[in-house]
Length: 123
Image (cartoon, rainbow, N blue to C red; front, side, top):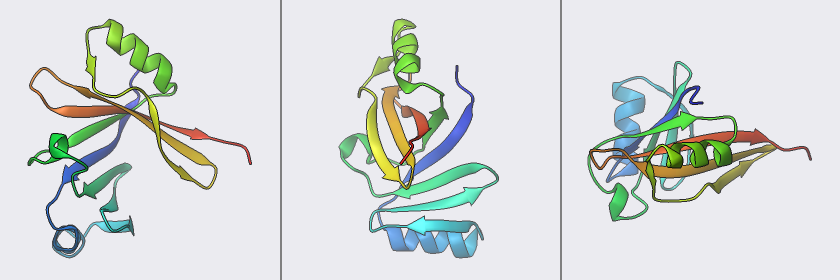
């Protein structure tokens, strides 16, 4: 069911300092930036720098986002396989005609990862 890695999230403490490092030191292509997030293109996998939303994400490490076609079906299937989800599938963002949905889970080591689905919506 998992197709590929769509995005890797890296928690940061200072978004401007981190953007400077990834853009100017690593020479990655900045796609866009908000007050709390920045997105870079890295050969088909997005790299997301983000200020932690809450203490669950406030640690050095990365969140791997796995692309799936149908997030509801994939979440259900993976839950039946014994994966502990910390959030049901939910809408993260709407951009033009695309909706981004995610469902977060823990691996066996306590790392947080997510299933993600980007769905085209007709206008």
